[in-house]
Image (cartoon, rainbow, N blue to C red; front, side):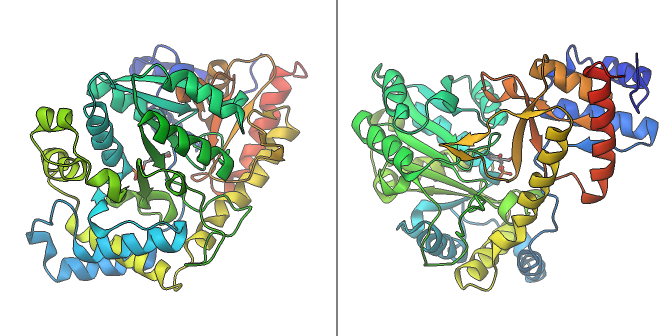
Length: 439
Ligand SMILES: Cc1ncc(COP(=O)(O)O)c(C=O)c1O
């Protein structure tokens, strides 16, 4: 029986062409390539939920500042590898205004997207202390960071936090940390892909254990302020975006401009290293990379070797966006609330058609509506669901790509246009009719 709105043969042929052995196990970029080919051949549009591309225009204040910077001629000049002063100043103010945390200018460092920031930080932290060479992922997580581990040839361990929320997190983390091989802990908050948001109690547990076992916490704030259940948008006023930086000095924060400012194309993010960690000397690190303290090794050895700094004009853009947010002229949270609104509608459409939310609770509260949600369909593994949905014009990635132990898929709302909701509903109805046996 086949009621699929897309021609099965074309999809199968493109899967073969790309040499994808199992679309259910494909990476994000493989799904992107496959769907591009099918769209091109059929002229039909997919409901694309596989990749976190911002679906909003870039923040105008950034665009204007970047054009001005280019017209001033900055393109001709190498920027300082640790960032231009205007950006460092606004970044330090932003961290104070929106996290209520003090960090000196030198610890606020631009990177070529958060991706480059985590890459350099993984490298530094795994080489800081002899015998501590393994990164611990609090999963589910962002699959590309595992790819970074693979490229670096570094070790990692992981667990799915689904059953270890609240105070249960402590014993679970200690199980790993007490072995003595963990150099760093990584997580995103709000979480990609589940949209769970760690509470202050959980961040305190992470921070205190980082102190006890002397590990570095890498807090990925790619979705800064996007837990829309609270208003984190007012500079210098509580509530603040919760952060581990309240509980430990062993932190590196990653603030991406890609989602909060819809500035993904310019690849300019921030790495924020605590003052204490920045100036710490690790003899192993000095031996390995020939630098001095931790912060200078990251900037003058690693970032210098990787890209010799971050695009000069994009730094001016980011400085201007942060400045406008710091001065209360630009409410960046308000601008991205659309994602939460769309998530609410899309979740309803899936649930009405036989799907369930996988990570549906956030410590007893229903999960918030944001950039991602997770869904499953009865009797199907996540991999089967990805494959089957492809024939119904819906693309996503399986949860097992993210370190989750649950069966299901990650749905990213950002790239789906409201005009596509009718198509989405129609396709989900066909899918459900086919797989619930009603067709
Ligand atoms: C958790 C997380 N970290 C980092 C990134 C990438 O950030 P950037 O575009 O700044 O490299 C993403 C993008 O989807 C993400 O979801």
